[in-house]
Length: 85
Image (cartoon, rainbow, N blue to C red; front, side):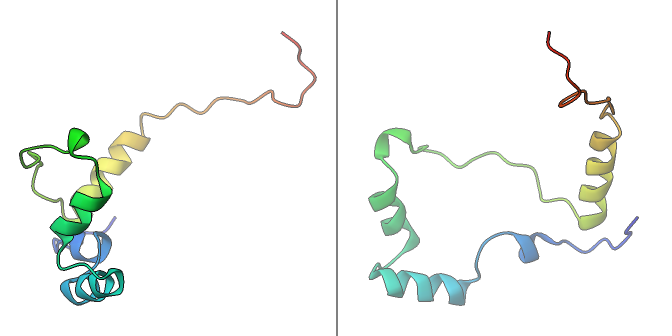
């Protein structure tokens, strides 16, 4: 298991400021807010910020995923074995 406490969200969550600026320029838009206003109907947008927990470190995320996967139950598949129920 990894034990590095460093956050890893910057490696996995969206483009950086330079990339965002380039994408907006390619679209001819001044801001992400303008993009959202044009692409997402107002009727489905939230009027508040989401209440999300702080991002987990890579070690924390891996531990959570390991715990979740430990709950999986391995079962035998009979697909293609000729059973007709």
